[in-house]
Length: 115
Image (cartoon, rainbow, N blue to C red; front, side, top):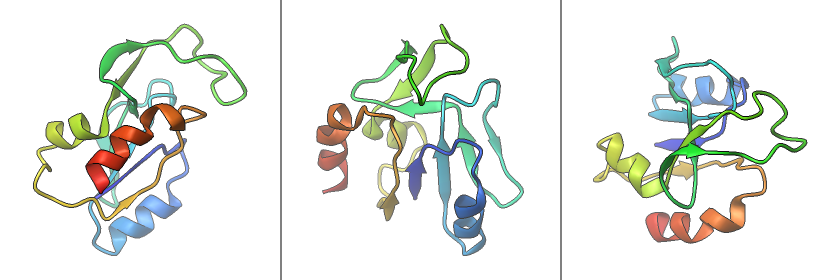
């Protein structure tokens, strides 16, 4: 299972799915892109990875987040994402993240789940 921010760059995701991997991509910053499954089988969710779960996260506007200012994001901890997808008994083989300078806030959550 793979979790990470996608930003409309699908080549790696599609390649992994085409190799038979279950791929789950998350990115709340892609505007009006809703939850869907790509032809390759990649599952996309407009959700972010965070240090706590909430439905009204306000991202800081910076070089990474320029679009949709004022938009509220849905974010989840890694543990909550795994539970919501009903994958609690499955290992995460790879975790690729791009969380735009929020790394230090979520590392304890990720470390606990992956280790």
